[in-house]
Image (cartoon, rainbow, N blue to C red; front, side):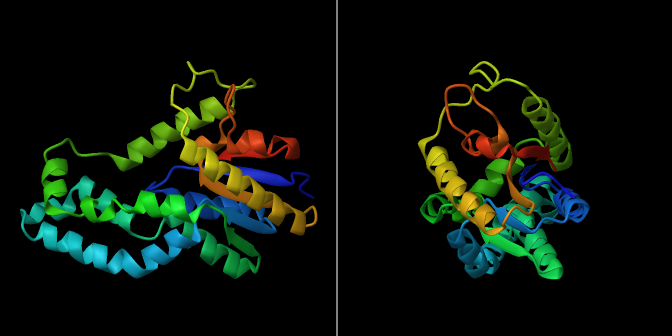
Length: 226
């Protein structure tokens, strides 16, 4: 029997190999329930706007050389405006296994983060992006996994030198809200194994400032990079 009550699963957002990796991760662990770093607003927005945004992107591409559509930049934009793979995998997996699935992020913060998507698909933005080197999303995902594994494996909190990323009040608000919601769902799970899926940065243990991991630390969560 799995003695771990909570696993914090850190993913790389927009990872091309993410769907397969996350599905296998869930299959190997078979939790009683799953929470996801995503808000109800984000879900509604993407359902209502992804076709419109895709059409706007296609209209912008029609003004460019036809080869632009095959650019790594454009593939990355399509992933950004579509439904996140994390949601699609979790929705399908939990439905198949008949276990709980809950969204726990903050809607008003998501509203601000998603407001830039119209600019992302604009002709002007495409022209700027296509003038820059092609991104290698798979290589970047692997790089992030290596960094995440190294930082999460540290036995002590990360100093500002280890993680020189400024504190973000919006991130702090999100993590506080996610902590409360995750705890509530774990209590209802009555001791069964629960998995929370979110960006790997939330799993860091930071010196002098809270993170999602430190807020949940009294539950002795297992941290894993997917």
